[in-house]
Length: 250
Image (tube, rainbow, N blue to C red; front, side, top):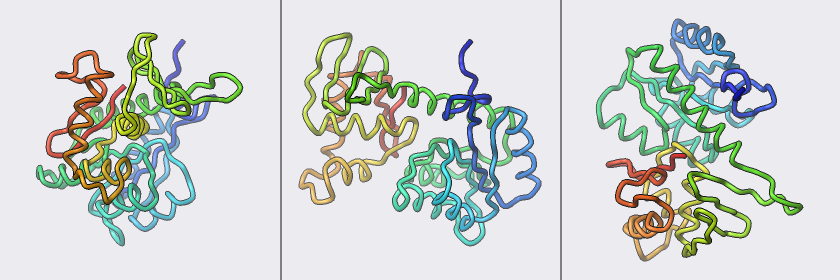
């Protein structure tokens, strides 16, 4: 029998998946808490952005449901603090009354994994929660111990990536990647489902002072896809998100 996300969660070994709900509406807090607990998730409520910020510095969560219209620290600012100050890669589903395309693009550009507009269908939200938790679980399960050096290896499709030896195999054959191609692959791979902007990628992989500019990200992505994707023109794993950036999918 396979592991059920609700029962065992990304922590495995019978540990429930932990969901942080950042929402100031008491009725919606109760609705989300009740339904998540019905699915065997462990829930925590933060009624303000400041309260959530404090919790995020002290605790780890498997998924965050985030409203944007929050007291003290709004959701957009909280998301910035999570991604750029605390460097928390946890999947975030934005649940907001702000339904403009510009709002969605800002949220996704800051690293949200998903965006759902209020009013919403509860069944859709629950399905997306489970989907993001399953993806996080697949990443956890793909980190395997290999020998006495405990090398961390990530597998997706017919690709195997050894981050310690900086080696990549495809279908059992070694794939030679340039250093920046490997760094770009690992950066996205460690953040499954999270949209990373070109600026974010550039700052981490190239450094802030790179003379190449953000175009280097697109060029490197193109050559990386040639090496690891089955069909580079229709990539399955290294996905372009229009007007936002790139994300990795298992």
